Image 1: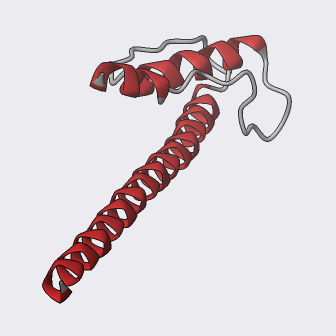
Image 2: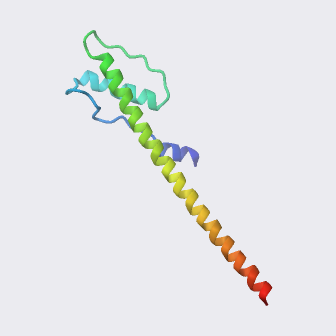
Image 3: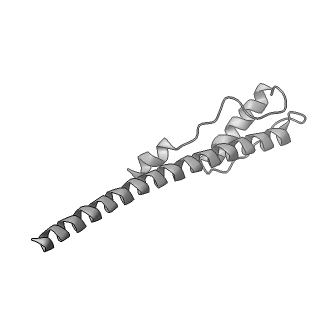
Length: 108
């Protein structure tokens, strides 16, 4: 079940990246590959001809992943908080019900 939960939170490489201008297809491919390597916790070895924007692609691809990762973790934390609140409310309701039953038995 834990595996399925992790899979549901897996990030897929986006089709668009925060790039200061329209990227070339080689830059988009570079950023997608980088994004997936980071997401999959792999080691990536990337090469591209001189002047193809490797540095900018590396920065934009990794920062896009970081932004997406932070949003995902915030969502996961919120979902966990919501579940804990439900559990706490259920426990509080049970305590109140149990307390009420104890008082009723005592008053008889």
